[in-house]
Length: 340
Ligand SMILES: NC(=O)c1ccc[n+]([C@@H]2O[C@H](COP(=O)([O-])OP(=O)(O)OC[C@H]3O[C@@H](n4cnc5c(N)ncnc54)[C@H](O)[C@@H]3O)[C@@H](O)[C@H]2O)c1
Image (cartoon, rainbow, N blue to C red; front, top):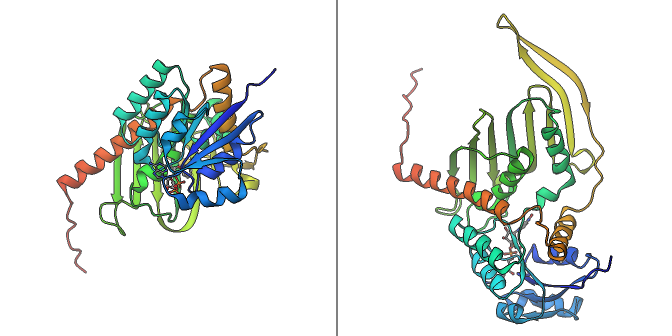
């Protein structure tokens, strides 16, 4: 098959933009030809390292250029406006997670992409992670049995952000993993969050999601933790599985363990073998960029299409609302002082 040449423009040359650009350059017949960042200091390294890439501090230069597609790797508050402009100029768009800062903006981008007949994709990198896909297979094939609950932890010291709280920064990953592996949406959400270092910017959060069938999921995200933990634990009535993103050699472990209650109320335990499936590793960001290029070339929907991004934004927005309502009511249960 003859592949059409694809020219990509990247907006945002901070931490994540260069990683996406490296992977876009790995796409057959694809290359990054333009980079924009409002901070000219960020662009200085490109003039030395990749002098063939055109750089600019004006995003309008990218929109008016001959690039076929634009990747937006800027702070969340800028996603909607930049993606809107790019679509209006006829560009295909990959927006970093979360798609937008609210539901209305995400809905508008989806409608605009449809009208413009352009790809709108969101950077849900973990949906392209081979270990997450292995976990999804276990869940979808019923290998773990009926699911009781999922526990997701994404904690470390930092990176503190001052424009969004930890829910909008880290939870998009876990929410997208949950929706992807389960294939169903939660019905309820409860939140507990605390702002320790910066006023009103919550740095620790616990999200409790409830599903129609009684299944529950708990997400713990934090910038204030001594250890880097990136773990999803799935508890089924037949088996349990742990996905540990920080352990490349043993990313998925399946525990043949469980507990049952029989006729009389005595719990019996099952202890079996632990299985560690082999995972053929390909960098998730490479697979994500490949999916974007393929969607542009074939017109097929990418895995992390706009609606997928919208569902995650809906849950983040519901969590934010729940948090605001709770804080405005400021209801605290007072514990009686314990007498010694
Ligand atoms: N998928 C992932 O795993 C992953 C990982 C990290 C970050 N991200 C996402 O990538 C995005 C960027 O995060 P980051 O960590 O690279 O942030 P960053 O602060 O390191 O970089 C953002 C860059 O955007 C530039 N910028 C800001 N506003 C701009 C504008 N209006 N026009 C042009 N340039 C502008 C800044 O100067 C900066 O260089 C965020 O949406 C974040 O959620 C995703």
